[in-house]
Every structure is written in C-alpha cells, then in structure tokens.
Length: 346
Length: 276
Image (tube, rainbow over all chains, first blue to last red; front, side, top):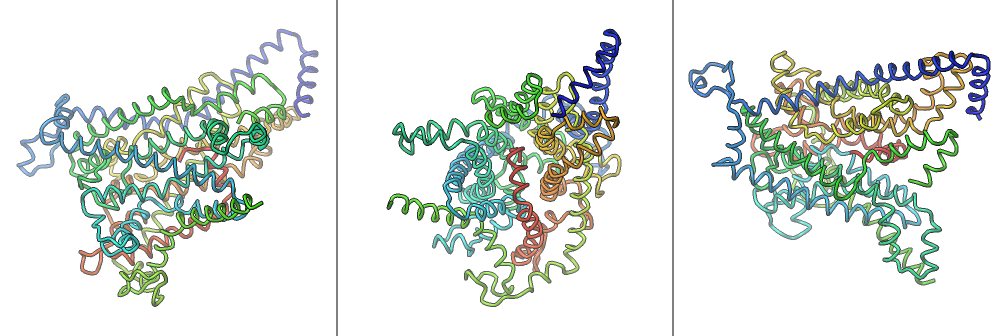
C-alpha cells in the first residue's frame, strides 16, 4: 500500500517536472546511494583489511623470513630477521619436521572427516526426532542449546574430567582406558567432545529446514504409496540439502582450524591430537615466527582448497539465498508478493 | 492404532535420548562442582555430601578469577558493541541500498570467516608487540572484531532483508530525511534482529580462546576461559578438577540462562546465519 502511495507521488513529481530534470534527479539519487553505501561499508572494510587482510599477507611474507641464528648465542635480543626464501617450507616438508607436519596434517584431516560425518548423522537424527515429537519439543530445543553455549575451552576441561583414568567415562564403560594420555584413545576423546558440542547445532539447522517442508508433500507421497524411507530419501533429504550443505561447510572450516578443544582436553605438543593450528601456535609461542607463519599459510591454503572443492563439487551456495532475493527484489516491487515467493522458495 | 501408539512411545524415547545426550555432560560438570574436594573422584550420580567448597576455592586470591571474569566481560562486551555499531551500517547498506558488486562484497565478507585464526595470530602478535599492545584489552578486542564482524553482518543482513523498507520510503516522501527515516522507522523494527545478533556475538566473543591465550601473558589481563584452563592445584601438579568444574559452572550458567530466556530468538538467529 505504501508502495502505491510512493509511486503515486513519484508520478505526480514526474508530471510536474520536465523530463530532463527528472532524469538528473534519478541519476543523482543513484549516485547518492552509491556514495552512502561506500560511506557505510568503509568501516567494515577497514577493520577486515586491518585484522584479516593485512595479517594474511604479512603472514605469508613472514613465512619467507627467519631470525638470525648466530646472534641468539650472544644473548642479545635479535633485531634483524633475514630472508630465507622457502626454507621454512622446505624445513616443514623434509627432515625431522616432515613427520611432525604430516602427523598434524593427518590429525587435522582425520578429525575433520570423522567429526563432520558423525555430527551430520547425529544432527540429522536429532532433527528427525524433534520434528516427529508430539510433546516436549520446546524442552529438547532448549537442551540442545546447552552444549552449544558452553565455551569450547570449558567443554574441553569438562571432557578431560570425564575422561580421567578414574573418571565417569571409564566408570560407565567399566574399562581402564587412559584416555587423556597420548595415543588413539586421546583421538577418540577429542572426537567425542567435538561431536557432542556441535551435532546439536546441525540438528537445529536441519530442524529449521524440515519445518519449511509443507506437510501435503508428504501426504501426496503417502497416497502414492511411498515408504517412510523413500519419503526421507526423495523428499526430506533433497529439500533439506541446501541448508545442510552450508552447515556442513562451516563445520568443516571450523574443525580444520581446531585448537581449543584438543589443547585443553589433551594438551599441546601431543602427537596423537596435534592439529595444524596447534603446531603453528607452538612454533609461535617459541618465537619461531617464520616457521609458525609457514604452517599457518599451509593451513590457510588447505582450508581454501577444501572450501573451493566443497562449493564446486557439492554446489553449496552460501550467498545463494541473498542473491536470489536481490534478483527477486528487482523483478517484483510489491513487498507482500516478494515475501510470499521467498517463503515458497525457501 | 497400535502403530501410532508405538510411534508415540518411540518419539518419547527419542526425545529422552536427545535430552540425555545434550545434558548429561553438563549435569556431570555441575554435580562435580558441588562435591566436596575429598569426594571429588567419587562417581555417584548425586554427591554424597553437597558442598560449596569448590566455589569458594575458585575465588581464592591466587586464581584471580574475579578479575578474569571482569576481563571477559570487558572484552566480550566491547567487542559486541563495536561489532554492532560497524555491522549495522554495513548490513543496512547491503540490505537496502542499490550498488554494484553487492553480492561479491557479501561473498568476500563471508569468505573472511573461513580464514583460520592462526594465520592472523603471528603478524598481529608481532604488530602488537611493536606498538606495546600485549597485555591490553585492545589486543584481544581488535582481532575479535575481525571474527565477529562477518558473522554479525551476515545475521543482520538476513534480518534487515525482511524489513519493510517501503515504510522508510513513505516516511521520506512525507518529509523525513534518510537519517530520520532510518532512526524512527527502521531502528525500532530492526531491534529484535539486532538484539539476537548481539547475544550471538557476545557468546562467540566470550568463548574466544586462541587470541586471548596468545595476546596476554599477565595473569591480571587473562580472560575467564584462559584463566580456568590455567588453574593450578594445591600441589601444583594435580589438576584441580573440582575447582575448574565450579569455575566452568560460573562461566556457563549465566550464558545458558540467557540462551534459554531468548531461546526463540537465538534459534532464529542460528538458522538465519547458519554460520557458527
């Protein structure tokens, strides 16, 4: 209704003004919009350039330098660093460093692979349960937020406590496993804690996707004689897939840079759970900045590669919805019509 | 009929399983916090004797936990406020104004969330060392802005898109300036979305660990999460789990209360953002 009012007054203006004057006014409006946009966007761009753009570039530069070695023995604080080219990288990929690197690389990939699969399976299961729930849905939705709200470092401590030699996990399993010592149990402990914390989050997102699916779609399928499993495979999964893919992508990116949980739960510099972020952090905390930056750069490239492959192969469209909306907004002017199409599309 | 009944029972069993899965570890943390230190390793489901000893131990002088809580509050609070101020402008421009490269820009902002924190750490650590920012609040707040901004812009953008901007145009036709129209029409309508974003940003900033751990080496400036992970036991060797669980409860319970009160908003925010 407001639109018509707007249009009417615009029409009145247009009728009153000469065509040429009207064109300049419109052009001026577009220009002032652009100028305003630039003004409003610049603080964000400035902050992101300073806090993300600069460090990534500076980090790459840093990875080509190393501290002067001879000077250290004199006990002086080293002023100058020297350019070493790709030495920091070759040191990572060869010699003693290679084992540590491939171990960390393997751990990072292993954690990502296992936790994301488990999270997705458990999360989808949780969402289906909640969607079917007759009563108590609000209660479960509340309890699902609890693991999410606990700080990761605290949940690391919590699980360290549970996985103590004489802790709750061993009491429940009636085993005597040294979870928090090095070795495979340590990996299991980290995976358990990570999956516990994040699968409710996926569950929540999938539940939101499920609630968007109109019920009559299922009814039609049932009339046509589709089994529950067929309904899940050909209705639920395809319709929930876009939301799920984005959630999984962000989970993956998050696990790839995992630090808090293994660092608190098991400890830094433990072979079994050392991730790429942990190894880079350890180097940095020992003031080997060049080497730390090299590890960070490798991790950065790895994450970018995985994100690229994920988007390319599976077609996860992160800003897709926003783009659709922009297009639609340009096509149709009426606000309520726009809202309706959006509800149907999503 | 029996089919629907078994379905009903199965649904309750499922609900119970999900609730136990989510709550059992948290229950264990709370219960462990209320045990007496000498019963700490007792694995009974309810403490033999309830005690607040762990909670008093948390605030013992050498832990500096009160100060750490204050630090967390300052860092997370300021991060949230700054993020919102900057983020609202940007999200408004993205949702409302028409200009080129809008989607590319949104994509770029989202892409920055995937950058690993560690690749920021080394250059910022060096930079902050040079300008004397180590052991200051700003050394934790400024990097946190970089993590919090993309997330909150994404959320705010999703919320702002649903606003009836035609109302704003109508107000401008009726003689409001753009600023007035924004303040009087859009801000009140956008308040719920902004509030949701504020909660999510605050929680993310409150939970931050890597930067807080690296930028600070003085006990007085540690945030709560870092301080708890560094609690030392009486002998300095054994880990004071009881105290740590009590501190964990103190740090977590206010968060959980807020989350439960604003449950609907947070779920709306998480599903709109789907980011973190």
